[in-house]
Image: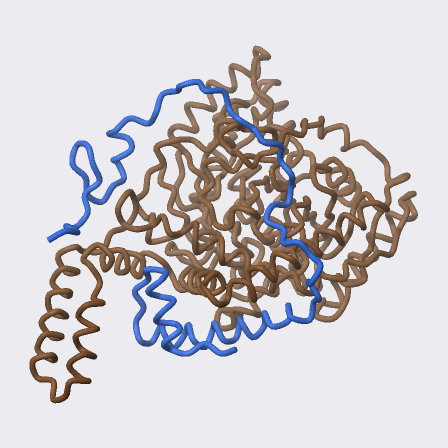
Length: 509
Length: 95
């Protein structure tokens, strides 16, 4: 569905069209199509309609912010004051944020309307938006297929016309891969470019917030609003934010595009390969310089990521203990169960036929959980879904005594080698081109039983997070299966301008 | 290296996760698969490589020592499963 972009929407309002009416059309589309697609979890329509009236006035008197005209949805992992932030988890099913994330504050400052909260894989862990307590989201272009993930709701909302821009988060490809699967633009900024304050943390050294939109221009606009240093995030960078719109009108002349052999090899759908390479050919004809390059450590990306990200997740998700916020297991039941356990163990000690047996049961009795510890365990057992538990378990394992060096330490070293590959590459090229994902959107349920197969969907996107560089996925035409193909550009840390330039050139082809 | 059921139960205890018997079996199989895949990392010689814990170098940065309004009590306790007017409440720890 091609909708007016943010500037066009604003222009339309300036020339007399009712902004409320435009917002109403978005709400209508949600009412009509969302029940079958399960993309929007909640909306703030009344608030949005009131805001539309106020923003309309501002547009007409010339005082409107830079995002006036944006009708947005937010991934349910970014805090909006007073709203539920569920992270797709039973753990936070009823959690209401008590503050705005910095990105939300910045969007509000620029007069964006925040209409909806969007579905996602639980705690941003997944590549299909099937791991959500609210149920799987379906791809608007073919409801038998996944939206991709974990920002599946954010990509699909744009594709379905429920929003003209959304925010997602990208830890290993979670903006770019769903953008590719849904045929929209998705931009993952460099690590540190956008404040993470108010983003519920999954893997803090990887997480980035970024926009999903219909056009590269809109992605640039949203990025412009949210980028820049924030004192509330100690890892947000001091680098100044350039004017991204400058990059929209640059030609291909002089653009140096790296083509990494490793990203076009085994496992890649041949049609996608063909599609991306033909775009590259056209860019060359238009004056770009094509440079064959190598990123030799790319094949270790997935394994490295799943050591480091799960380690960070196991630590980050320790905060969910049923005490300060979120789900808590039934305390009375926990106490009752403990009492019964204690009674059982004491009986066993009494009935023990040998000293060995007796000391065995005594040890068990001594080691019994305290009521508080048991409450943590029950709470977390009930609150987290299977994929989240799997990653917490893995992360705990790779950080545990005896395995730390073999897994965590090793992966941190390989992370440096992966980053070095990129630093070397960007000495000679402005952007690196690749497919965004090895296939188009797969069928719902098809990768559910094999975690590794699911993880391999991120093979082309994950290195950018490991290296801290930025990436964009832009729609690049349709596959013969009817689904969109995503083309990815990656650029050096803080060089989002080159992404926008290159992305725009593909959009214009 | 292969993960046993006892290993899984040990990790679950460290992670403060209640797991059922069937989950233990599932995790054992998944973790062995995934850790098996991670063996790939041993192909890389990292003997002269420093670990990377941060992708960007940030200069040391201190904020100004200026007080700002903290979250008030009611707000901070609003999402607590159990609280009185001042504190989060948890099960008794000391008998």
